[in-house]
Image (cartoon, rainbow, N blue to C red):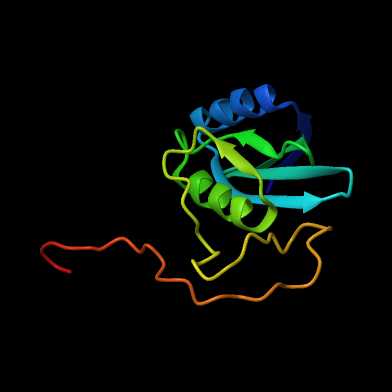
Length: 141
């Protein structure tokens, strides 16, 4: 079986262009992971395609003092979830995200991003209301 694994370091503009191209070429977004490297935040987007097995990693660096990245939610539903998780855990803002509400940090979480190197110990969690869950209604629910 033939395998192709590529890694590219890209700018934010290059990220959106290459992601769109990979999705057009029948790749799927399998994972997005963030890493706090101290002086910068590194985002790794893993795209996969099969038959033959192909893997492409796009690596994009964002500054710690302006942690934002252009959202890919408009072309990939999985990207929307990964971006919301990165916002919760790393304070990386997905610019242009259609629904940037919290995903893993519920209402009782303070303004604390636990995966950041400078996060420090967990602050006091307060009982401050309910998480704004979406109500699901309709036939079959």
